[in-house]
Length: 405
Image (cartoon, rainbow, N blue to C red; front, side, top):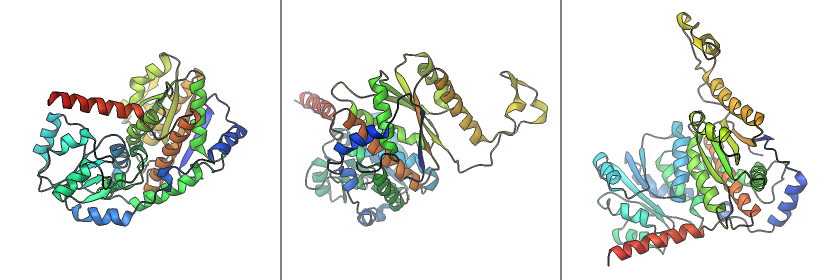
C-alpha cells in the first residue's frame, strides 16, 4: 500500500467488485512491464552533468508535452522545498514571449535546457535557435535526432533521454535533470515512485490497487454516458499536476473515437465558474476531486474583530466564520461540492493526498502513470502510442516547407 494516497469511491455510482478486477488482471499479468516501471534512472550521472550548471540563478526549459509536464508538476508541487533558482518553462515560439525572456535573463546568469526525446520537435528547435549565445545543456536521445546533432556540433553537454514515452517520463532524466536544478531530492521522489509501482502494477493485489480501481470506475461511468471528468484540485501545490494528468489521459485514451475528456482547475477557484457547468450543464461529467489532507501551516484561522462580528453574511453573520482554521475552510468547500453532487446524483470520486512531500509526489506520479495505462487497456487501446499527435506534427512541418520554397 502507498503511504500518502487514499481513494474515496462511496459515490461513484458504479459497483467495483474484486472479482471483476481480478478477472481483468489475469490477462494483464501477461503483459510486459511498462517501460516507465522497468527503467532504472542513473541519478549519479544526472547530478554529474548538471552540477556545474547549478551556479546559474535562472533556467529556461524549452519543452512541450511530456518533456515539460512532469517537471512542471515538481516545480509547483514542491515549491517549499526548491532552491532559489528561477525556472521559466518556454513551450512556444511566440516572438513576444521570447523577446521578454531575452530582456529579463542574460546569458551570464541563465542556463537553457532544451528537452526533446526525438530531437526533432520543431516547437523546441525554433525557440532554441534564439538562445545560441546562452549556455545550453540538451536532454535528448543519443545517436539520433537534430537536437543530438546540434549538441555535438556546439559541444553542449547531453543528458540522455531514455526510451520512455515523454508523458510517462516523470522518473527519468527528462524530469529529474530539471528537478535537480531546482534543488529537489530526486532520489526520494524516485524511491517513492518505484515502491508505489509495486502497489499499482499488473500483479499487485487489487484490493489495494487504487489506480486500477479509479480507472475502472471512470471507465464504467464512461460506458454509462459520463464522457467527461471534472477535476477540481483543492490544493495550489497539487494543481501543478493538472497539465500532466490532462496529457496522460487525452494522449493515451483519446483514440478510436473513445476516451473521456478531462477539464479542471485549482479549487475553490473552480467553484466560482465551472461548478455551474458541473451542476447545471449537460449530465455527462463525473467529478474526480483531488484534496490535500494536511497543510504544512496549521495555525492560521479566520479572526473576526468583535466590532464587525454582527455583520450579516448569507443567512448568518461574520461570527459564523470566526475561529475557523483556514485548512478546515478549504475542506468545507470541498465537502460542500461533493455533497451537492451526491444530492444531484452526479457520480464522483476523490483522491486524497496526505501531505506534500517528495514521497507523496513520487507516489502521485506512479498513481497517474498506472491509472492512465489501465484506462487505455480497459478500452482495448495501446497506452503508449499517440498517432494523431504525430500526424499534426507532420502537417505543421509541411507548411513550413511550403513557406520556404
